[in-house]
Image 1 (spheres, rainbow, N blue to C red):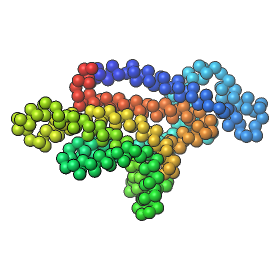
Image 2 (image 1 turned 45 degrees about the horizontal axis):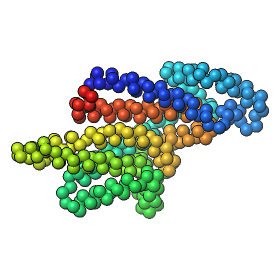
Image 3 (image 1 turned 45 degrees about the vertical axis):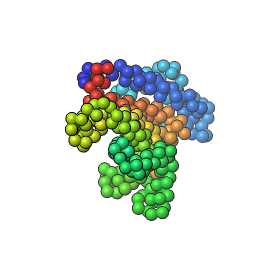
Image 4 (image 1 turned 120 degrees about the vertical axis):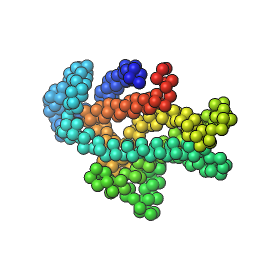
Length: 314
C-alpha cells in the first residue's frame, strides 16, 4: 500500500500546483478593481493608485503569485480586501458550518446510496424492485436545490417539524444543531445517492450472472454468505469511486444549499467574495475546495485498493 501511495504523489502534486495557478489567475480575469473596492465608492484616482501600490497589485503577476503561494505554504493566507481581516480567520469562522453540512451529507450519501442499491439489486419481488427503482429515478431527476425547496415547503411550511432557515453549531448544541442540519444535508445528499445506488444495483445484478457465483451455489454455499461475501463485496468498487467523486460535488452543492437554508458557511463567503472582487478570499477557497476533493479521491483509491488488491498492482 505504501508503494502504491508513493506512486500517486506526482499526479496529486501536479493537480495542486495547476489548481493554485488557476485559482490565482481566475479572480484577476473578472472585471473589477480590488483597489477600488478597498478605497470605497468616493475615492479619487490618486487614492486608488496608492492603494494598488500598497497592495502590490502593480507588480508583475509572476511575482504576486510566488508571494501568495509562499504565504499559503507557510500558513499566511493573506488579508481580506473587503473585511480587512486575515483570510484564515474568515475561513475558520465559517469552516465548521460547511464541514458539518458536508460530513452529514456524506454520511447520508453512503447510507442511502449503498442501501438503495443493495435493496434494488437484492429484491426478488417485482413490486419491491419497481418501487426502489422508481425512487432512484425520481431522485436522479431532482437537483439538490429543488429537493431543498420541496423540503422547506413540506417540513417548514406544511408540517413545521424541522427548522428550515439559519443554523446552530452541532458542537455548541448537538440536539438543536442536528435539527437545523438534517434538511439541508438530506437535500444535498439524496439526489447524489441515486447515482451511487444505480451503480451498486447494476454491479450486483452483473455479479450474480458470473460463473463463480454458480460454482458457489453448486457447492452448497448458503445464499446469505454468497450475497454478502461474493456479490456485495465485489459490487462496492464502482460505488466507492462514485462516492469519492461525489464528495467534491458535495462542497460545490453546499454553495446553493447554504443559500437556500440561510446557512453562513464557506459557500456564502465564496459568493460574497466573488461579488466584491475580494480575490484574496476567493483564490484560497478554490485551492481549499480542490485540496479537499483530491484528498477525498485519494482516500477513495485507498479504500478501492483495500477491496481489490489488483488495483495496487496496476
